[in-house]
Length: 459
Ligand code: ATP
Ligand code: MG
Image (cartoon, rainbow, N blue to C red):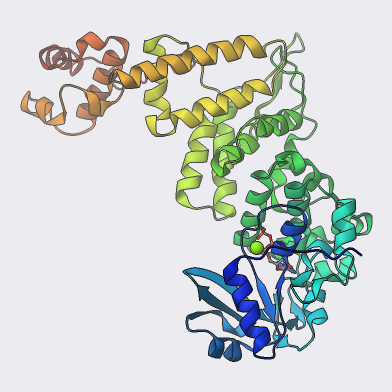
């Protein structure tokens, strides 16, 4: 084999050098070796060594005890941290997820054996070159994800590897080896034992990869039926309407491909139609409708994101985007102001991206027209923001205090009057003057319909 050379950053090279000069073995290992051989930029440079954690600490000035029990010390080099982990064998596994104990070893090969996939089980240092016991290089060339050792056993040890196989397949565009696939199908039930946090991390990596449509593979392999059964429900759900030619699953996958690789946006597209199976109705003429599906999808997204323990910011943004994704409005200033009021200025750019991706996954016949309209709406939106037009209660020329001074009691009526004033100004900006709004408020406070919400179907 031709000797491969890897360009290691100075800090990592210095760590390898100091460890080997002190008589220990040391290599860069795992993801960084894989990425270098693929010509990709590694995210981080992990180091594996025969030195024990205390021995590592004795050799470097600045270290952090990252995971001493598991053999990991972070060594700081020029303000850059490198994880240095002692060669280890993971002891017997409990519950398909935690090694009961870890055992240190002096043999590099033992450490490589515990790693998940052949392409992740290579080590390198400048003296030895690439150590590749399991033909990781061959699998990189064949573009295959394959377990180190017996797949079924490896998934019994840690079921998260099932999801990681799909994750690396999505990130690298590789196929999963047949034997590994068979074992995955057999072992998916064990994913139920894995913590939500670990599932979430891998799911996000699939969704934000260049191949988010690999969610289909996760479903084919039986993975989503355990971690995301809501996905399985959209499979094969037809939508016979002039706007669509794909079923809900295919439309969903295509919409994910049409939006940038951002966690909130990809999660939104994944779940935007999850409510459709629940509300589908077939009309007499054979047409299929999904009345109010965005609301149902939003409730569904809320449950999923809580279950998978997403942070509040991600959850609330995604739920709002899913809820509003189907909002109907036109390109007039009035209509876009109303949309801004409902959706919220903070996520309006994302909302337009979501609508754009949704359109691009529809019937090709309707795409150009809908995209042109969306572009017009976007121009109107920019104009509204630039001109500082009023579309929220905060931008009104009067506030709650003015109304209290004018004799309206604080409470629900005050809130309702402010809402109606906002609606009126959204319709007609010339009303946004103190005198005019006060006069209108006096009329509104006695209006018997004051608490009735405006019909939302079409704004
Ligand atoms: P990324 O570029 O996403 O960081 P990575 O390959 O570095 O990819 P990590 O999750 O950072 O993946 O793990 C680092 C290395 O540790 C892997 O390359 C693999 O060798 C090993 N590893 C990580 N998780 C597992 C696991 N669950 N089972 C076995 N080995 C694992
Ligand atoms: Mg890594």
